[in-house]
Amino acid sequence: MADIEGQTEQKEFYLDIPAKNQAFFLKGSGALDWGIQNRLSRIFNPCSGKTVMLAIDHGYFQGPTTGLERVDVNIVPLVPYADALMLTRGILRSSIPSSGRNAIVLRASGGPSILKELSNEQLAMDMEDAVRLNACGVAVQVFVGGEFETQSIHNLTRLVDRGNRYGVAVLGVTAVGKNMTRDAKYLRLAVRICAELGAHIVKTYFCPEGFETVAASCPVPLVMAGGKKLPELDALKMAHNAIQQGASGVDMGRNIFQADAPVAMIQAVGKVVHEGLKPEHAYDLYQTLKNEKKIEAPVGR
Ligand code: R5P
Image (tube, rainbow, N blue to C red; front, side, top):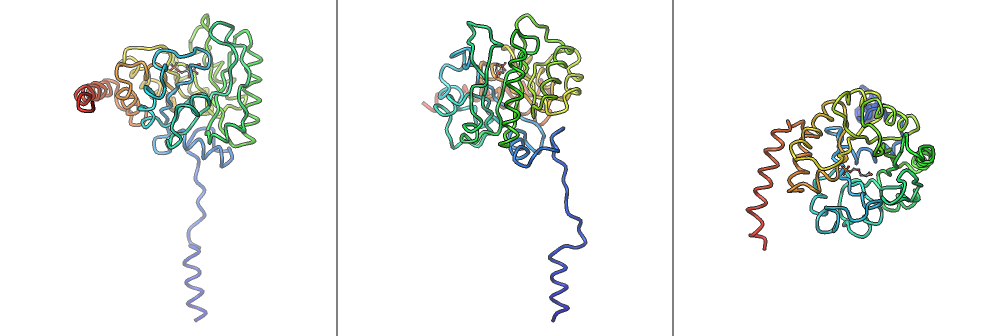
């Protein structure tokens, strides 16, 4: 009897199988604590290793910019197609249903409006409130070369200390001033400073020449900012190029919510990001979804 019990015990403990020690799927993130890794796994899809983050935080310095006048009407229909939402706590609490399953990345810096010097930002949110809102990440603007460069970098480092304390990922956003060149040399500098100072994710703009060196010099996941509105095919090409050259996703706003058909556009972007769909095929999908919407609209009335 004792022998049988012993054999059963041995079987249940799987003594012949070594304990699993799985590597974390995001670059540069293997040494992070479980809580941050878990939150990063909600921002980035563990299957593709990528994210489609929908940026709708523009109002924190621009007010109700085109496409964001009514978040409840124009943006909520896009929410199911995004992996993560990047937004302010005010819009989250007022306009986004709490039943959604998206990862939340909260804008955590602010201060000046478009009428003033934009680099003069300060931290604008407690980490405790981010945790209360079940945020996976917080975002802070870093103005490398800007008038208040040092202040903005201190905002990042203070937020990283708090993020590490609470297990919340910090997204460093490289803000490129109006008079700065968005070339690979500048973006490498700005991106690397954010990563060196502890950002868990970095967001930067795409540059047509040398973006792969920007991605390679960033030791943590890099997401591409969308920038000003482009024709839809061009925006899909830009997203595709960024992913092929090493980006771990996109954090796009205007090129999605200002598109002719935003719900179709975010789905096309998702195919490019997660499945590597060629931009021309993604554009075909965009057109198909856009036309389907036109046919369906009268039925819903
Ligand atoms: C701007 O400062 C905000 O961080 C936006 O989230 C960012 O610019 C991305 O939005 P867009 O794709 O419209 O440039």
